[in-house]
Length: 348
Image (spheres, rainbow, N blue to C red):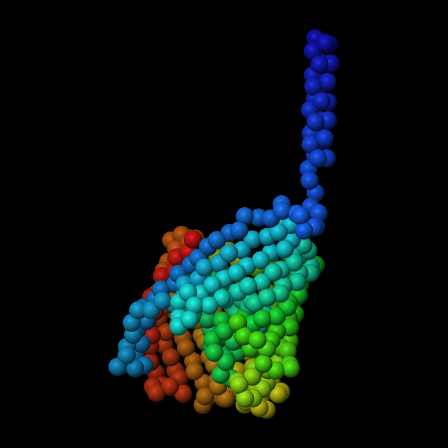
């Protein structure tokens, strides 16, 4: 019996020594032109959003079918610390590149991103269309964050070319969620796939606090300009709001306004929205939203929209939306009009 016990200890010691030797022979990452390992298999994906829209604004053109988005992307990582992404949009008048960037993300407290990506202005602008919850982004994002800007810039998808640092600081609570999130970026100011057109760069940043997990309270700032081909138009804006996403409940509320140079040059403008989403069933979530944009910063130039939207999320990658919108628009051909949107989302 003693002989068997000794043999067992010898066997265990041999296994331990072999495992230790194996661990010591594992190749460790080294930077160099000859390095070909330590990269992830690129992930390839795509999504489609198709829609039918009916509106009472123009009786001659009440509505029809359209393709809102067709996008494909490739992303991955190298050395588990350099991330990359390329995203293309296929629909519209001209297929084009939407995103391209490389990000050094070794430490959650400090990352660096360079390329073309979403501007760090407002909570909603950086969101994927799948996660907005209603048929489209808010007026605030469309008019004040670069999706058909109030100054005349074409729809750039809320994106620009530049360099950005960001991070999450101070883990707190039992769940160790991060108390502070920050972003600060320097951008051309002209939008996607365009070279800079003046000497000035856009500075965009945000500071956000997460007192409890899922609840963010933040402020955003933007100082720069956009060249329309003949003139540099000031873009000086601030925004503040909150975002809550937890247990499939959603609350977002934001306000943005033009300040200082932009207001002096192009007049006052502001926007406000409130969105609430409540789960009803595992596959059904209902949203209600109030959305307002005031082109001249007063009631006489306001466009208010009240909407209700049902999301039938049958699968992580399959969603159907039915939305009703009621408009009160001082600047449209009709003050009161309604829309019905039916949208289908699929991705892989």
